[in-house]
Image 1 (cartoon, rainbow, N blue to C red):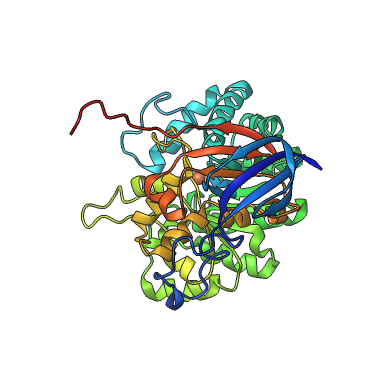
Image 2: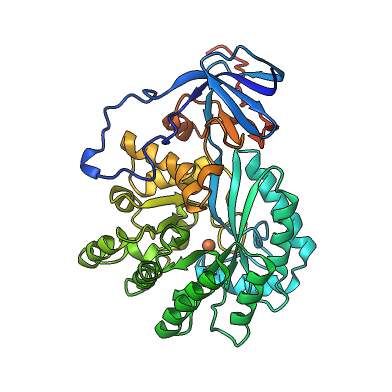
Length: 440
Ligand code: FE2
């Protein structure tokens, strides 16, 4: 039998990911002494059409195309769990965010989005998705601002979802950037966005006018998700205020509706400011929910803490502790070159690299867990289920890294040399090599 593609002699990490799925169940059992590559073997991977059809130490088969990996490391693709493609690549338009705060960013975006056209949204979104895919990202969840009556951002991203579907899976969340109850129309626009086909319902309870409006917005989001059978992803407590406590409301609604892993809480940066007595109580409730958590360490380490002098808070959720308590944590960029964050390259290894530093996850099991947060944990957040992973019968989405292990990839932010999407080679990149011109 002739296959379409065989990857020869790649090194494969165990299907459970680098550090278990979703997180380590018990921090007391974290083992730093394990070998980096204890679960790695060289294998051939056979692909027919868009499926993986064989994995074995040596496949005695031929294929139309073969790629010899010489022990390079094969990984499931990166998953970007949280980005705003509608605002990407607009940094400085119409002006730079001088205070660096979330709130000045919202003001600037309110001005910029008056000039949005669908073509503008589509062009920038496609440019960023290509930038990400070239670096191994094949699954993306983007929020789309639905606070304008035209729903231009949402329509643009729904069109992009179709344009890229042969090589990348894009989920679009209807996100009311200015709050659901900030004006009289947004609630209807949210519902219209779901009728148009948004994959998820979003929210921003800490930005609603009152605490009561915030709670009411969450109740409405859960109602809409149940009515339209959609996922939920809430921008939750993205503020340094230790009294911003909408996460407990999200947890209670998740328990009462039984929606569990269909619900994600993004940012939750106030969790980093809660007192430990409250945080401990909250963690116990969260463990009953099966909620997903999405942290965005690149942006939140710069966006938060802006009202502090010194000591200055890191403004991140409790990534390490959530993982230690067995909760599913994944990571995202949130923004790439927009009013909130002017940097970003679409490289998920940079995101995880910052998580390692800012969350002090420097043990080997912790570093491996951060790799899971940009791969298998992200797949769980996006509810990808059996559409993700390297196994016979699964869709042939995989990447090859110029690295020996998750640790090696993260330390060097290694080059993704091959991206295979739906069975077809999509991108090939040659790692940079220095040439010494003088003898030293
Ligand atoms: Fe966000």
